[in-house]
Picture 1 (tube, rainbow, N blue to C red):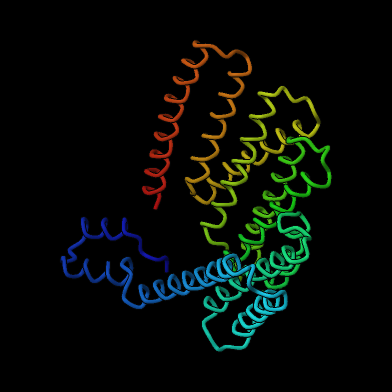
Picture 2 (cartoon, rainbow, N blue to C red):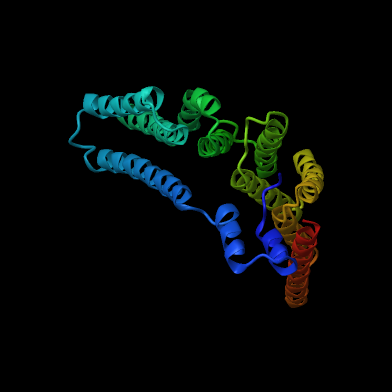
Length: 319
């Protein structure tokens, strides 16, 4: 049986002889979060905050006592913390979510360990190979855990590694090439995660995870295409980025319609408006241009919001 929604209960209360007490009981059973749900939520929140503050405290501890600590103590303490958190995550009989949160803290401590090592032996704590090593050494945990926050950290590390590699090793890459590579990387991860959750029912991709990735992809495409238009890029990488952006935006609209997700109907039109404004500024940049762009933004945002409201109303009626 399909789970009751708030709109279903409103319709039942209007067109049936259910009493106010009956409606209240249905709401409590199907809509409102009960005490166990709140306890679970608060437990996960406080554990996440505790792990996050602990990792932050460790980082500040090393920063404040750096001059007084010997080399062995710096590396030994960090290694001991990584081992301790990993052992806790692997061998304690605890809830799977708590285990994954602890494992995420251990993954962050791996970065602290490499940063301490880099500062001691001057291998560089902001070099691309630092982030590359961090990414490689937590890959197994990321795959095994199947935990969305840990995957998000992993993707952020991949993006950082790619950007630093382009700046420190392959210095002749222009902005269009880097933006195109970032766009392809994040798009492949997003499409792969959605396909995996579709064909493998045991894997659940949270909406917030796909929304964050989608927002990152749209921001990268908007920045890359707009910059290419303003700077009058004619390179093949700019052309590839433009074509891939069009295809991805079309897929995003199709997926939004299929899943009835209005998020894609908000970010993609906003991106298109921004790109159109960049094209207008390329043609001319004077007082008249600013007036045209201002009117375009006002009208387009109004139409986008109106379209979102109509879609939401249509999808609610279909339910």
